[in-house]
Image (cartoon, rainbow, N blue to C red; front, side, top):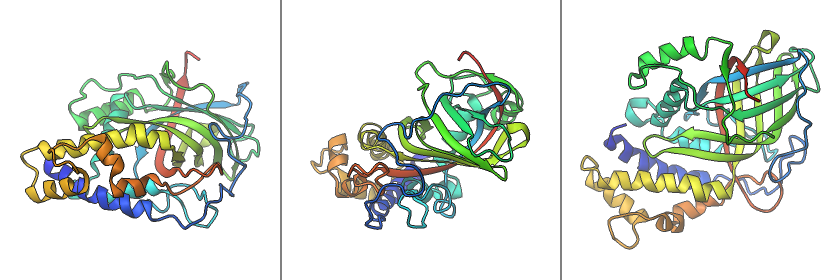
Length: 331
């Protein structure tokens, strides 16, 4: 990503943060579209005990929403008939960068094709077309070499399709992956809906690093393929906690702002806007404290949904995905 496009990205980001923070409809009610959500992990679900009725999957693609799909990919946490996806709207606001290419999406694609960003899913069902008591479990996958040409994005993507995402490749959960991300759910007409539950999720975020999110009230949805060997047109929806906002997302934004300020390719007018919004002590460097204290981010920190009814709002997120058959080992 060029620094000029990063600079433009920051301006859109600032505006999007404000819009997302103000988008709440004023409702403080918890999710009314499913069971009551516990603060950390959702309703209790018993572990999967597989007896030729489980299918292992790996996400072969994760799609960030754009300006068109942000309002369609997600979950209606407030029960008001509108999909909640505030962070997705922010990402959608970046979709015009680099001639219409979302640079964060490039980082996500690269992480998947290299095998450094892997999400594993196991589904259990008696019938892959209809089952009102289906279950699922999710893990963060351990890194796996999916291509031998990581610096050539096109070649890496082509190779990864044959080595990791052709179906049946072996994957293992990461050593630090939670082992209790259990989802209750159902399949109706081959349409699966699992959740809510807690889930750890790692999202590459351009050169500023990766975001590790401990999502609350996660829903996983998609079309189940024959014998459970695929999950297509998938949606992963969750809520970003205040802790993740403070400790993961905002430090990443701070890094992006400083990278933009120090790059000679950044237009001075852009630097001036960043300084006005964030560099309150006029030091030439934006600190994390300045980002947290900014009016824009304080609005952003308000969140848009209260998924557990505890009076603290989280930030909704929705992503698209595709998943193919895999073999999850070293359990």
